[in-house]
Image 1 (cartoon, rainbow, N blue to C red):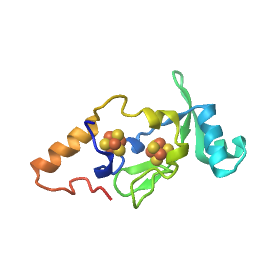
Image 2 (cartoon, rainbow, N blue to C red):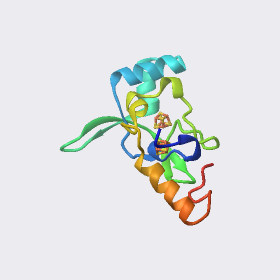
Image 3 (cartoon, rainbow, N blue to C red):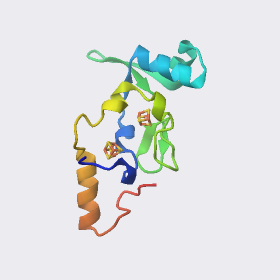
Image 4 (cartoon, rainbow, N blue to C red):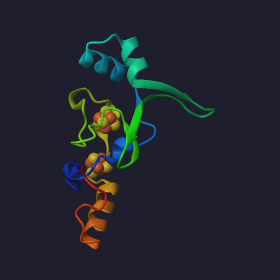
Length: 120
Ligand code: SF4
Ligand code: SF4
């Protein structure tokens, strides 16, 4: 595997548009024992422009990336709904390499600083 999420503070979870499907919302609803409607309102919002029409995961403020998915645990930097995470999160980074991990590894080695971008 060309990346190691355990040393990364969850950059992929800071993407502004983490789109979910109806199936993803139903899985989150089951996980939290909520109705689909309640889960949709609590965890997602509708984002629409001329070109885009998506249901996105809500964010919260973050000390590393300013803003991250509301489910990212701020202390452990791990997904707080791992078993119920949306499909897009299961697939990311769509292969056996992660560009951000390569950047992190390079910069930490270059600066000789394992906390270049703190991992917690
Ligand atoms: S950005 Fe890459 S290394 Fe970091 S958590 Fe996401 S997939 Fe893992
Ligand atoms: S659901 Fe989990 S894996 Fe997906 S963006 Fe949120 S914290 Fe990251």
